Amino acid sequence: MTSIIIDSDMALGCRNADVDDAIAILVALSEKELEVIGISPSAGNVPGDYSGPNIDRLLRIIGRESVPHARRASAFVSEDHWIEEGRWKALGLAEQDPALLEGERSVDFLIRRLSEASEPVVLVNIGPLTNLALALKVEPRIERKIKALYMMGGTWFMPGVGGKDKEFNILADIDAAASVFLSNLKIVIFPLDVTKKRKIYPEDLALWKDSSSAFSRYLYNECTAFMKARAKRDGYPDPHAFFHDVLPVLAIDHPEWFSLTPCSVHIDTTGESTRGKMVVDTKLRGRREHRHLIATDVRESEVLKYVISRIDECYKDAVI
Amino acid sequence: MRKILFDTDLLGDDLMALFSMARDSETEIVGVTAYGRRVSSLDRCRMTSVFLKEVGFRGVRLVPGAAHPLVQEPLPGCRYCDNVLSALIESWNEKDFGDNPIDTSLSAAEFIAGTIRNNPGEISLLCTGPLTNVALAVSLYPELPSLVRETVIMGGLYSVMGNSRALVEANMYNDPEAAEIFFKNFRNVMIVPLDCTLKVLMRTDELTNADTHSIRGIVSSCCQSHLDRGDDAVMPMHDVLAYLVMKDPSLVETRRCNVKIELRSAESRGAMCFDWNGKEQIFCTEVDTERAKQLYRRLTGGV
Image 1 (tube, each protein chain N blue to C red):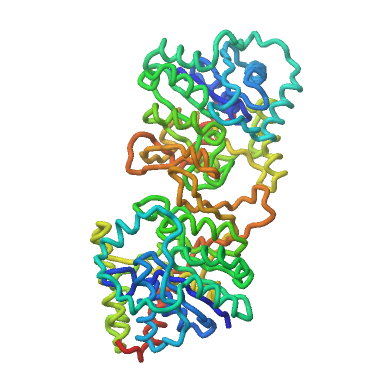
Image 2 (cartoon, rainbow over the protein chains, first blue to last red):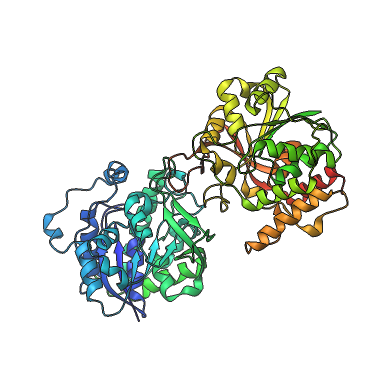
C-alpha cells in the first residue's frame, strides 16, 4: 500500500473547464494499492477559490468526503499574471461563495499531513507547483517525508501553450516550479510528450455515454462539454481532450506501462525567450547522478481502456 | 563554379569540410577566415596552411580574425579538439606557409566585407564556427546580406541534447551576441543543426585511401576522445555536412522559421529559440545520412 497526497487544480464543477484532474483523482481513489491520505487544491485550470470547493463537491458525490482535503489554494508565486487575464476571465465564473472556502489552506495542510505521516509519502502534483514550493519554504523538514514527487508538467519536444515549447502547469507558476526542481526531491515527470500521445475523442468515452451508471453519464457530458469549449477556445475542428493527469497516478502502481529516462531538469527563470521552459538534460555534465526521471513513452491504449472501465465500475453508487 | 568564403574555427571537422571543398572541382575557395580560442586564430591559420598543402592544395588565402567573443569572456572550448590541433601543429613542425598565404594585413571581418562587396551576388558564405567575424562584418557593412549569393551555417539545435548545455549548441554558446546579430541581419540562412549533424558519423574503419594522413589523425583522435568520455567511437561530421548541404540541399528536409538567440538566461544563453510561424530562415530537420556520406566520398575521391 502506498500513501499518496494529490495536489490538484481541480476544475470539474466549473462549467466548460478541464476534466482530467477529476479523472486522475477518481482513478487514484479506485486503486487498491493506493491510499489517498490527502488532496490539496491549487490555482491553475481555475482560480484558487474554485478548486477546493470542486474537490469537496466531487468527494461528496462519490461518498468519499472522509478523504482529508484542504479548502483554499495560495496565489501564484510568480508575477507573470497571464492566466488571470486570459483563461480565467474566459471561464466567466461568478464570485465564489465564501462559506465554501471555510477550512485549511493547502500549504498548511501539506505540511501537517506530511509531518503526521509515519512513512514517507508519494506526492502527486497535477497542477501548478505553487503549494509544494511554498510548503517546502515554510517547513523544509517535510522534504524528507516525500518519498517521490510524481508530477504532470512540462514538455520536452511536444508543443504546448500557444504552440510553443512550454507547458501550462509550469508556465502558470514558473518560479514555484523552478524552486521545486532545485530541491532534493526525487521527481518523476510526465510531460506533454507522453500525455499528448493519444487524443481522446467523444467516441472513446462510449462506455460512459451508454453506461447504467448515472455518474459515468455525467462524466461523459462534462468531458464532451470541455472538448467542445476547448476546440472553440483554441480554434481547431475536432473536439478532443487529453487525460494528462492520470499518468502520474497510474505510474505508481503500473510502472510497466511507462518508459522512464534518467535526467536532470531545471526550469529556466532568467531567459527572455526561455523563461518557463523545462530544460531536460540527459547528459551528466559533471553531476554525480541524475535525480529526476522523465517519461518518454506510455502504453496509451492500455491506460485509456483501464481508466474508462475502472471509473465506470467503481462509482456506480455515486449520487449525482 | 561556386565561390565559397569559409568562416570557421578550424577544428577537426572544419578541416574535413575544407578538405572536401579543396577536392571539389566545382568550388573555388575565395578565402578562409578564422576564429580563435585557446589555440589562436593565427596558429589555426598556420596549421591550416600546412594542412592544405598536405592534401595537395595551394593558393588558399587564410585570414586570422576575432580572438574572443563580442561581449562575454572567451570559453575554453573542447580540449580534445584543441589537443588534436596542437598535436597536428607540433607534428608538422612546418615553418613555410607560402603555398597557402596567411594574410595579416587586415582582419577577418574586413576581409569578409571586402570580398562580398567586391563580388556582389557571387559569394557563398559558409560559417561553421562562432559567428563573431561575420557579426563584426555585418555591423560595419549592413548591406552584406543583400550581396551574398547564399548563406549556410552549422549551428543550433531543436530536438536533441546540446553539446554545450542541454539547450545550447557550441557555436551559439561561444558567442551568443554574435549569433543574435547574425540572425537579425541575414535572411534565408540554411541552418544545419545538431539534429542533422549528429546523424552523419564517421568511424575509423570507414576511412579510405583517399583520406590523407592528417584526416586519418583527425578522425582517430576525435573517435578516441568520444570513447574516453564513455560515448561511441564516432566522429560527427558537423561542418562537413554544412558544406554538403550547400552543395546539395536535397540531402535535407527543411522547415521555415524565425530564429532568436537567448541572451539573458543564466543556464541557456545561446539557446536557439524558434517561431515556427515565421519564414525568415531555413532550418534543416532531417538528413539523408547515406547520401550525405556518399557525397563526401565522391568529392574527396574515396568512392
